[in-house]
Image (tube, rainbow, N blue to C red; front, side):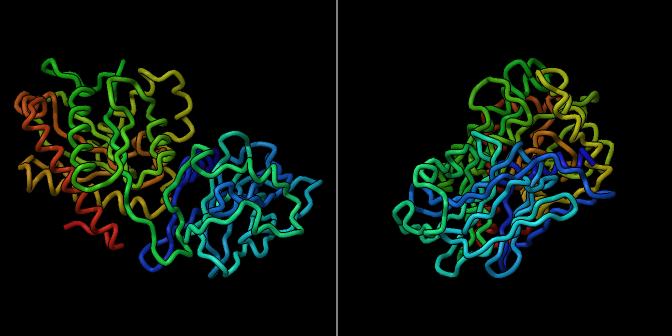
Length: 426
């Protein structure tokens, strides 16, 4: 079960988001184990501190090591359930009095896991976020006030709270901890968050050229398309655009998804160009994370994932969440997979209808670059460099403009449907 727990950690670490409410499906994480796992992480304290900006409270769970996985989900109207997997209470743990928007809380053990249940007060609308502290092994629960009415730090503290003002001032917000999220888990807000950050990932780069054919390098083609796409999105949709690389440099696959998480991405688009032994093969295809169901999908997956062995300094880190482990486990972690598939379908429809490219369809596969991004994510193959005619199109300003425009139209449609709470392809 080590691969299972490691995959959960990556999916929820750095801000895996779950929104719940009338427009959103919340899919919980199910840990299916043969028996209770031995806990090796101890919780020594739970501290309540006002945020330094007065916009909420932070619940700090002090731990002897970093929990390998965690999950935050709603229980009832104003209750949260926070599970720290393979974690238990230290023998010297003493319960502190709750403070701020926390009316009460309990810490219990179940099957080797620690469960923190938090009951929130009814006075303010709260958006909770769970994340790891970037400066320690501690776990943090950020309780942000949705109405954003400034209050003095410590003003809402309970007299019984033992957290000092000095320690409260040191409590980081998600952005300070390097794990920023935009309105994640907006359970108690009258309006859920909107799509406002798109992460564009030009594949390969630097020492990794990607596919090479007819004197062209995949890394150059996708970077040009990425910049055109980013310009369209920023100027016409008023969305924030984040690039995993803006120039010719090498970025590890896992780090690309982590960057998207840290920057609060709502949509992750990884751009690539394909290659095949037969020069007659051409067309576009778009992938989302899932089980590979065809030989062609497995071939593309292995081709893109081979980067880790050829160019990365620490390829062994991918062993524990190998794509085959994903296939064997049939792990469905969140509703974001559904939205990834929907967006992939919109992209392919735009390629076919607007740019008249041959559509090779929507597929799913275990791409490492999508694995670490905890948001709707797709990998787009823009065409085949090994096809001479298609290579000329991919290398032309006209071709790159058309392809970027098609993806832009897909983002625009997805944004409109997303913000209405309805994501469906034509």
